[in-house]
Image 1 (tube, rainbow, N blue to C red):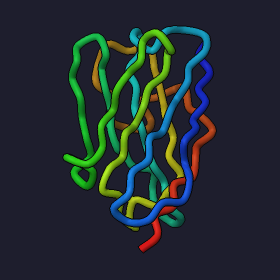
Image 2 (spheres, rainbow, N blue to C red):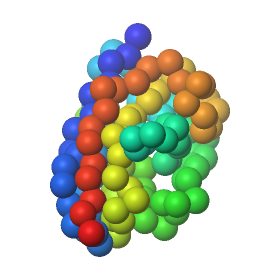
Image 3 (cartoon, rainbow, N blue to C red):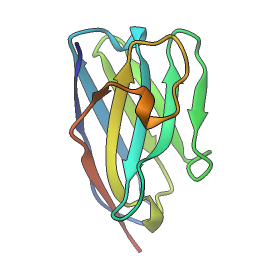
Image 4 (cartoon, rainbow, N blue to C red):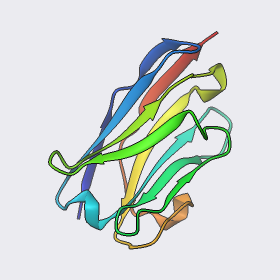
Length: 124
């Protein structure tokens, strides 16, 4: 079992930056596949970034490539999502997810563990 807790959301102006954190308890992130997803009102949950820490493979959604970065602080057992050059269309609730897998998981249905979500609002 693993428990996930996101933090770091908030209100930011377009062009600004935020860093989301996802702290895990129970097991170490480095043994899990990890993903960041987001869901805006009336829209389906979409993958933002995903990482297989065992293989090093990374995936970014097309809309965030070059702007968002997923990283891991092994000592803190915390995964981060650095978000730069934010746009109003990035406004959503952001969730981190994890699953016991060595693979790169890019679909929400592949994950069994989820955080509670953190709101990100980007004003124009």
